[in-house]
Structures are given as C-alpha cells and as structure tokens.
Image 1 (cartoon, helix red, strand yellow):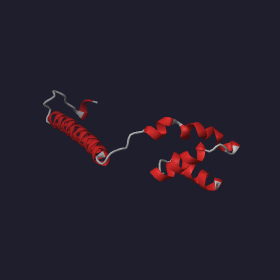
Image 2 (spheres, rainbow, N blue to C red; image 1 turned 120 degrees about the vertical axis):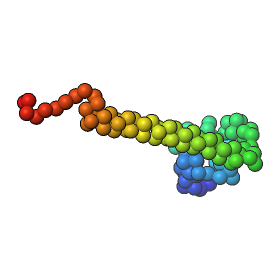
Image 3 (cartoon, helix red, strand yellow; image 1 turned 180 degrees about the vertical axis):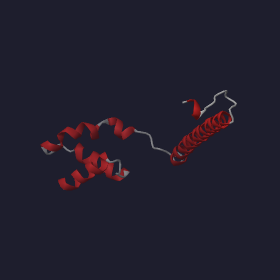
Image 4 (cartoon, rainbow, N blue to C red; image 1 turned 180 degrees about the horizontal axis):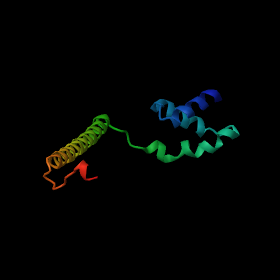
Length: 115
C-alpha cells in the first residue's frame, strides 16, 4: 500500500475534502490487519461500524442546506435593517436636539460677555 497516498487522503479527510470513494479507500486500508505504527491511532476512527451504516444524504440534501443558509441570510438582513433604522432614528433625534438647543428652545443661553 502507498502510505504517502494514505497520508494525503488523511490530510484531505481532516479538511473535509474527500470524496465518498476516498473515504471508502481509507476504511478499506484501516480494516487491514497490518498497519504502520504511526497510523494505528486512526484505525478506530475508520473501522467503526457506524461509519459504514450512516444513512445516505439524499438527493435533496443540498437544497435543504441552501434553504437553511438563505433563512439565516434573511434573518441577518432583517437584523441589519432594524439596526440601520435605529441608527437613523437616534441620529435624527440628536440632530433635532442640537437644532432646538441652537435656537435656544432648551432654555440654555450663552453670553460670551458674561465670562
């Protein structure tokens, strides 16, 4: 067996970039009786019976994931819109306060000659 290929497949596996066939190859490799000592810790990961009995993702898997992503994007978009409106309301309120105080509607006066 080409141990360099197995190490490359392991690197790919940990990056979630392997195909189903490459994962099957890893399971076949780790199911063998003779393994190099540096790869023994990974054996339990690839020979578990759960790995073989996982249900297939199904034809609509991508559509379901994309639907969840679009829902999250709508939620973020709504949150950003609300935050923008709050920002604008506060900004306009502060401007109005300064405008009214500038026309002495706040009851404040500033007389530089009194200093």
